[in-house]
Length: 221
Image 1 (cartoon, rainbow, N blue to C red):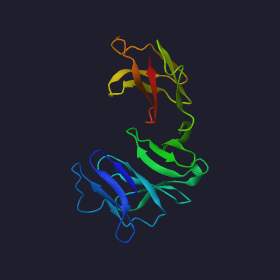
Image 2: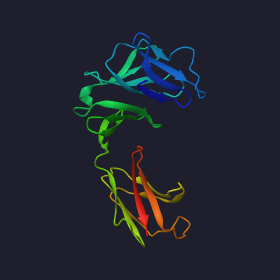
Image 3: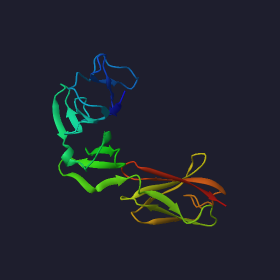
Image 4: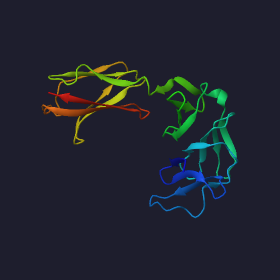
């Protein structure tokens, strides 16, 4: 198996058939594979990395991330016909697509293994610079660790607002807040209900709309 996708009802798995041809099977929520593959005998392609399902009614197109030099992202319908593609020229230079998924708004998200970035693709406008998220540049910083009294938490390099949450080591949520781009949050050591949190170690977790997650452990004295 080299890729997986879902439409909310079925799970689609990309792999290879008996003779090494690309094959996509689909499973229901019980893990039962259907009687026939969703797609089989796809046109010969280079190495496959992942698939993304575009649709929602069980008859959608499957997008495939490949090593094809001309168009490394291709789309096929249920008849195995090529119905769409993204030319290499439309992607940032040197892009190596590895992961694909569609969000609920119809945008295609593509991970680039070469630049360690994620691209958000709008099929009507293309790739916008504001849609490029770098894993390398974003990170969490705190004013002191360990700390007593209060601590200032900042997200460095984030291109979008993040959901910031603080958990204790048992997994209980201490508080949540939204953090704007280039903003900081000062935690006074209290829970969402206003109680003073006990001394100990806590996890900070920041998540942006694309699902990028940053974590850091801090200790309150």
